[in-house]
Amino acid sequence: MPEAVSSMAGAEFSGAVDIREDGLQGMVTLRGDLGDAKVAGAVKAAVGLAMPKARQIKKGKNGGVAWMSPDEVLLLCDHAGADALVAKLDKALVGVHHLAVNVSDARAMFTLTGTGVREVIAKGAPADLSPAGLPIGEIRRSRIGQIAAAFWLSEAETLHLVCFRSVGAHMFRWLENAAAADTLPGVL
Image 1 (cartoon, rainbow, N blue to C red):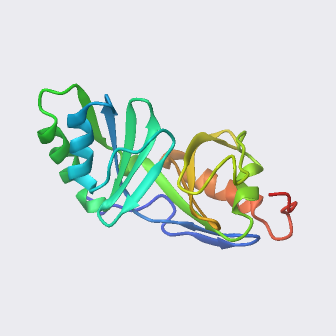
Image 2: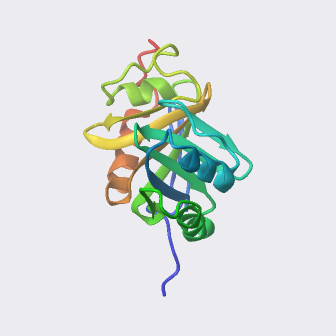
């Protein structure tokens, strides 16, 4: 079996902000009744974190969990451990209606750093990117330049973005263009 590679092989860009393709990231989609105690318990056992509230993302030493919709969370883990995480969830949720899928190789992940990360994303996302509209630790599913994506700030100047791998190169080029030096209006 060929060795896994990320969509952009760790590509980097430095302009008004710095952009980095994060390489391989384990991601497991879990769908089910997020209010079910067994589902919440399975998430806690899997990544050591409580079920997030709506539009919240939590990170811990064993991974992360992001609320994606009323019946879906995205679990972040080590890339090599994603299949084991799916098996662990399936075992914990026997008899509970759910779906756990390793989506790691179907996604690309990028990190943007710098004072203008909100403005770069605001150039293409129809979302409120102000600090009140997107507080640190809140995840947003939207479009960026017509590309489906999810993004969140882990710190004031650090934004993470996930999109489909099939459009990873296109997203990177879009971000490069939006983050070109001297192109941020300085509004946010």
